[in-house]
Image 1 (cartoon, rainbow, N blue to C red):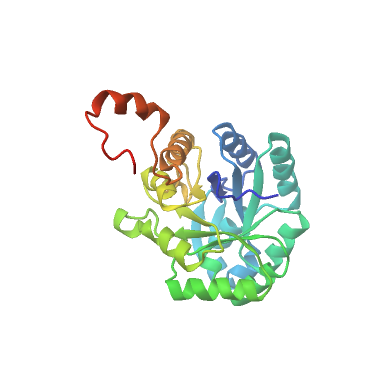
Image 2 (tube, helix red, strand yellow):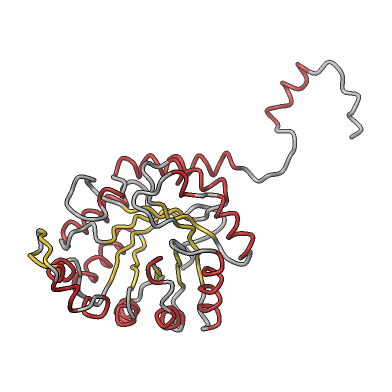
Length: 289
């Protein structure tokens, strides 16, 4: 499959961990994302005891899932049967799903589920072993660039490509939650397009609202990814930096309009201009041009 093209912006709803460990809520979110026109939904997958130290997991942290950080992290993870339910629903609805693996075992877990893409999160792109392991699976990669300067992004792309990996979309991203307007830097999309002309460039946003996500189309973004929730007041660390169903619907409408008004860049006379031209122009002495 080829979800990422230059012809139409691919909109991805990052469900991530906003399901709070509930498969029923996750499935409801998939349905909602499909209903408002998203092209894909994305989750996150971790092997908890690999990604976090024993000390980190033992720290006290009250949550609906328990009393420690470990209770929370383990409670947020879905197993194979859960992802099989997600995959079945997505196949039924006709929406794509994939996830961000945070460790090598999670890469293998997702590959075994036949995901069409693997998304490498900004937090993971300095992990050379993970980049190489993901690249060698042969599954097309989506790569975020938050917390990176251009030199670091160059190293990420080089590492993946030298390992034989294919980058389906490279996402401009700022990893602040929410991102302030002065941190968003949509012109970075143009910078990445110029530096990597062989790659498709997208935008992964964490801003309040939806305007920057819509404006990213004018800079050439071929995909927009946003954290998604059914209720921004719901418990969870990512809820407040997410957008809800109504906002996603409005954002997609804005993106589709932005695609139209961007045009193809060819300067010419539109057919609907000609009657106006004949009515308003007194002289046409440059006609030979």
